[in-house]
Amino acid sequence: MVVYDKNNIRNMYLSPYLKFAWDETGVTVYQIVFCRALRIEAKREKLEIFFTYLKQGITMDRLQTEIRKLLPKADPNLFLTQCIRNGVIE
Amino acid sequence: MKQDIIKKFTKGQIHFCGGVCFEGRSCALLFVPESGTSLLISHEYAEHLRNGEYPDELLGKMLSRGMAFLTGESQLPDHSKSIEPNFFLIDMTQFCNFSCKYCLRSPEITGKRLSKQKLDEILDYIIDTCRSNHYTHISIQPWGGEPLLEFENVMYIHQKMKDSGIQVNISLETNGSLITPEVAEKLTEANISVGISIDGPREIHDAQRLTNSGKPTFEEVTSGIACLQKAGMRNIGSISVITKDSLKELEKILDFFVKQYPDMGIKLNPMHSPGRETARKMALEPEDMPEFAGRLIKKVTDLYKKGYVVRESRTSTLLRNLLCRSDSDLCHSMGCRGGRCMVIFDQKGDVYPCEMVDYPEEKITNIADHRDLKKEIEKAAEKNLYFKEKTSEKCRDCLWRYYCRGGCTSAVMYQNGKNAEINKEGCSLNCAMYQSLIELIVDDPELAFCIMEGREYPGKRMEE
Ligand code: SF4
Ligand code: SF4
Ligand code: SF4
Image (cartoon, rainbow over the protein chains, first blue to last red):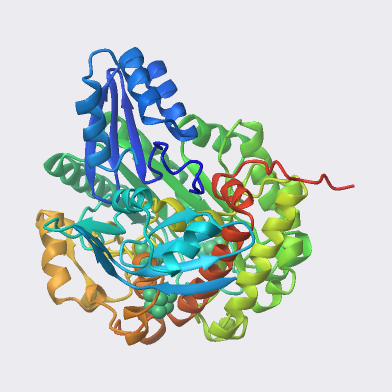
């Protein structure tokens, strides 16, 4: 949970309005405010690192670097746009 | 705590829905009743909002929480009316070996139990409902009376559902007296969640919960809990009814649970249905609820500050509503989901919303008719009183309407036989709880997060 102030407002965070359904090939993230689902396929350990960064707050540049590293199959810009549009990342 | 209304506005293509800004010692909470969502912000940003200045970055966060929307975008989906029957109560027996002073059961009813054959038919009907609606996860609660009087049938439910391949969370609320080491082992093995009715320390418990012959029950109940613990059951819950008398000892009750049973969940049910004539004097009234809420929150926060973790469900559920809107509590996240999500099967195979078995006019269907449950609920929702929206003016402007919507329908119906009114006790309790919890959040957000998540408070000062 984050309290937004002028020092962290530009950082990207994981929305608190999410539910996660894990399976063998990845995770389905449900955004409960918009009732939308986003599917992300990758190893659980990598996804968990990714979500940990987002829980702590991360700059946009660093986030793109991490996506390239952790989720090499994803197009970073497209993936981020999808996450933001669906309210998964704010 | 300061409280200001932030009016709706449009900036470029962004429309803000309007909300309330609560400001405390540490930070501010922007809350939007329309969406039931919130945003924690610094004092500086709260000042900006009050002056009508909306930094772009803040608007971005508001958009992603459904507090604001872009021109042309549709409004938020409302799932409170959706029909997804996935929580099934089964009336196993009306008999009980206890005779608690506040019990809603009529004492004349003894020994009516669900036959194995009818149970089988009910389970077939549930399985058909799941298959035709592609439900893979459901919940079943064997209900009573005392459900463990029907222990064999409870285990039969487990076995039959396991064979069906549908994932079922079976939970039961029991008085605990029939839990032997063998019963405890079987329940643990079957992964059945157990909530034990225990009203607090011995003197408080024994003043309210007696056997049919009037004997105290604390010893039997605690030995049932010990069997479950010994069998390695995790997530044992406790359910305590708070009466006018036991309200005086609320702090003592919470101390008892956190110190004697630190791993156990705590559910405090303020008694507010009138029940039997003799029990009427024991029920809390709307005026008692602010006191209950205030003392509950004060005690829970004090315990956290002393280094305890208190697994009390009402404070954590309501905090979750305010901070991340979990939407999963059938009674307290989106208003009452009785009938739409939760239905009960009585011993004749009739299906009713939630606990409405005493109201024949509220019947949804009978399993013998083999009708599609979802469709039958849709029909009932159009004509039955139970499903009628509560129409109080008060709710329309209420800040907590997203989570409450007039409160518990069964409580209202059992109190006055109609469903046009709100549940006054629940209303008074919600208003007091939410206001105090917001105060807690904006004064000490870290403490609020710890209570919500049930983890140790880093700022604790251990008790001497
Ligand atoms: S244990 Fe439950 S069902 Fe039995 S008398 Fe007490 S409240 Fe009623
Ligand atoms: S019953 Fe009370 S708390 Fe609930 S929505 Fe209505 S006014 Fe609000
Ligand atoms: S009727 Fe009451 S107990 Fe039943 S689902 Fe609704 S709020 Fe919950």
